[in-house]
Image 1 (cartoon, rainbow, N blue to C red):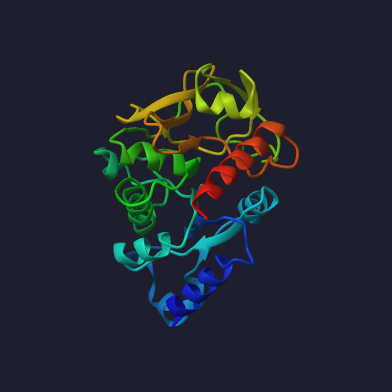
Image 2 (cartoon, rainbow, N blue to C red):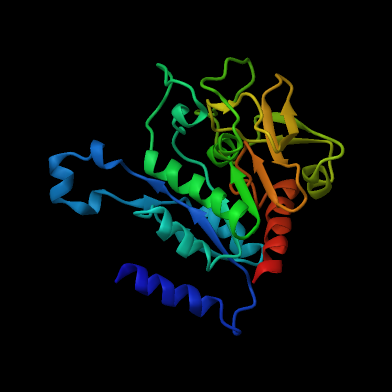
Length: 266
């Protein structure tokens, strides 16, 4: 019944009355089934999907319609939902499982959401095998994109630069990034250097085949990647532009450009 209701809703928002692109946002997942306690099984309300409001606000203000994508039960469910979308945001969240990058977790690895990892890899599989709708990766989402292309992780950043701002408000920039001159990102933000917030301890290690680096911080941490093949519109940034949307022009432009590209598919 839940999927039936969702199907009707997505078809409604795709009707002629709505000319805006429908954009899915992947959601955080509280726990994998193996981590659910007996008490939680008795009270299913404790198991939930979620996103922060900033993601939807940024999409809606940029001219799109934001739809939260819950963690599905199967790859087939993911594909069915993707058929109704014009673009997708792979949002931030928990650490990704190093295993998908052929690496082992260490003492710095935080909580994992393996079902979400699988969902987002299925989404990228859909984009490459069925419909090349635009993809915007944010923080964790950028690392998932890199993992899909065969890249690796830095499991814990060791740097004097602030990459995980715990005591500073998240809407404030904490370090600068240099944008590669001949990149799609540079064309979007129209600046060679921008200041960003930062809420991560994992980062991209080796860049996957099919991706190119489009931004780095001064400590050589990769801050953004994008697809090499022009047939795919995939950009991933390591910062959180949705949080800075209302106060930073470059962050706003990133979403506006993304939504404009999504309109080509609605």
